[in-house]
Length: 81
Image (cartoon, rainbow, N blue to C red):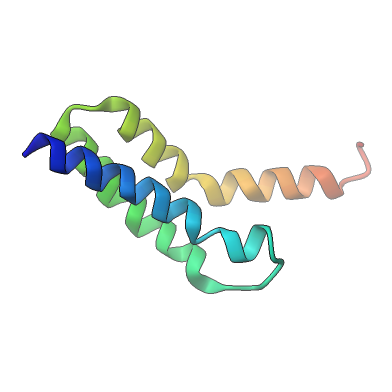
């Protein structure tokens, strides 16, 4: 049972990364990035149940990926560079 939870939690991380691809790499304004919040919460809960905390950390990072990407984007476009 724990092996299935680990696999599903890892798949949630991959799905969270995949929904960012149209926005980040292809510059297509896609609302799919919102699914990152859903996938990452599900993955974090499954990671906790599987007691694999690296999966929990990965899913939490993906939960906050919107804010991380926004920070990086604003920093790159600022006049500080």
